[in-house]
Amino acid sequence: MDQLKRVIVDYKKLTPEVLKLLVDRYPGGYDKEHIISFRNASGERIEAVEVVSIDTKYLVKISAKLVVSMANFGEVDMEEYKSAEKDSLEDLKQESALEEE
Image 1 (cartoon, rainbow, N blue to C red):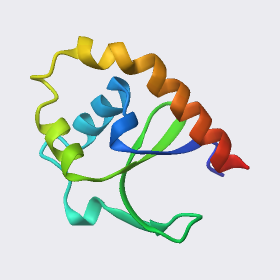
Image 2: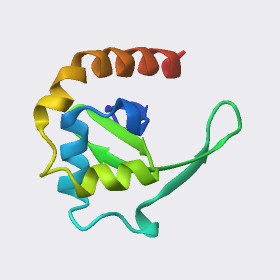
Image 3: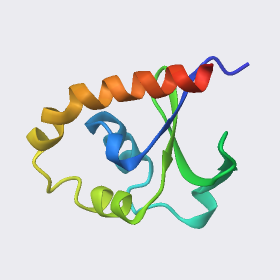
């Protein structure tokens, strides 16, 4: 049985670690066969790509901004991400808690 914590994350709340997982898993970008489609609790259709860390399975919602972030990952100043990292991690914890309810 899968013991990983499951988290759905939006582009706006990506941490540098999750973005790195995405770039490592999909170095040439993702294709349509990588996209997972599902309906959330509100009935909205969500499209996401999956990445896995040691203890968490992330479904990262796809968008045009995600594609740009992945493409620019090596060129972007990591300090920009780190300044928002604390807030992003807190948001992820809150989302995860809501999804588990």
